[in-house]
Amino acid sequence: MTALQLNAEIYRSLGVLSEDESMLKRAAKYLKCLAAELTYDPTLMSKEDFYARVDEAEREIAEGKGIRFTDKAEMNAWLNSL
Image (cartoon, rainbow, N blue to C red; front, side, top):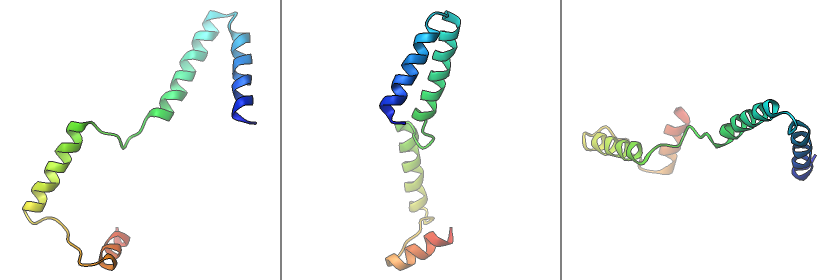
């Protein structure tokens, strides 16, 4: 089924539900939950959190806790070990 067909099916179903306000409210609540699942991204962070992490990384590097690689092979070996 294509997105256009699915869209049409959803609108047909909403047309049936439109006669019952409580069912329409339930459908709206469920659709909001589905939409929230698509928009939630656990990797997103605020600017403050991002810059705090950058500051922490810079502090660790200044303390000598950073990791240095001399070539790509060394870096790839370290990444593969994780």
